[in-house]
Image 1 (cartoon, rainbow, N blue to C red):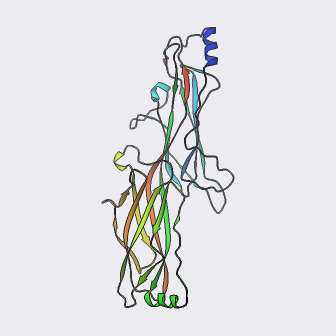
Image 2 (image 1 turned 90 degrees about the vertical axis):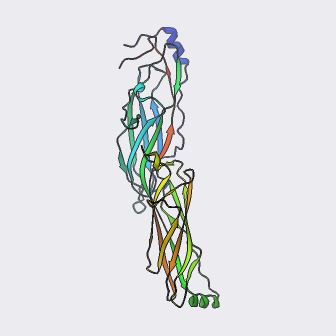
Amino acid sequence: MKAKSSPNLKLLLLLVPIVVVAISGCTGTSDSGATFGTGIAILNWEPTFSSGLESGDSLQFRLRVQNQGEVTAVEVTPVITGIVPEDWGLPTSQFYGYGIGQSFDMMPPNRIQNTPGEIRQETYDARAPSLPFGVTQTFTPQIRVYYTYRTTASKLITLVNEQELKRLQDKGQTLSSKDTVSSAGPLKVTINAGKFLKSKDVGVSRAFPITVDIQNVGGGVVSTMNQPEMDYVVDIAFQTTSGRLTLSGCQNQNTQGGVTLWKGQSATVTCTATIGQVLATEEANIKVVLDYDYYVDASTAVTVTGTEEGYYIG
């Protein structure tokens, strides 16, 4: 049972500031159309209370997240960190030791229908932790949202034979380069292959280097729960649409076909592009697919004042 507070204590509590810190990486709600960002965005992470908290008082932590990327986010899993879950009456996980919610999938924005990405709201019932009488302490509960994602990128490459290239130059024409098209998500891909790839007229294949640059733009971390060996590791696959263009000998990949981001931020993969004989000009599409696990963080703050007894028995 919680002891009654004295009038002087009540006056003291009225003077104690209630601290709620804005979450890091917070973005506005996208509810007016298909707006694309960098994957799962934490819109809100905050406690609910209207006055100073005493040990044993009930409260809720409220979470609101949105998929602002371009593909479905799979197994979205919020994990509470920064506090001891047992002290707050929160559920714990036998694997991670954190307060943990249920996993769910989230749909992305839809360009055709012009609808925003799915928003999910979660609440977590909690109880202010036990503190000795007269002690006021500020806690910083954090939320870490894990999810599985895919990023795709493609680039149209012009294949041209030597004779056709000479004809174009004689007419004062040039071949332009097309930019990489990358899906919205926490990782961004750029494919670098020059303006064109030139083939031999005599049917002999030629080889050229092509580089794939990967950048972490989501403000979070490539990581898998309970698998630290997979930190910064991204699965990568290559496809081409033309039988006259093949990719091989890709460097910086591990034995499983993945690539590790340097300090979790970037990586470059260099491949050999081989082309056969082309009649005149031909456009071939190079496609890169990344599969990975990712998380983003946010934090808030709660101030609690201890009761006379200094403990709470649930």
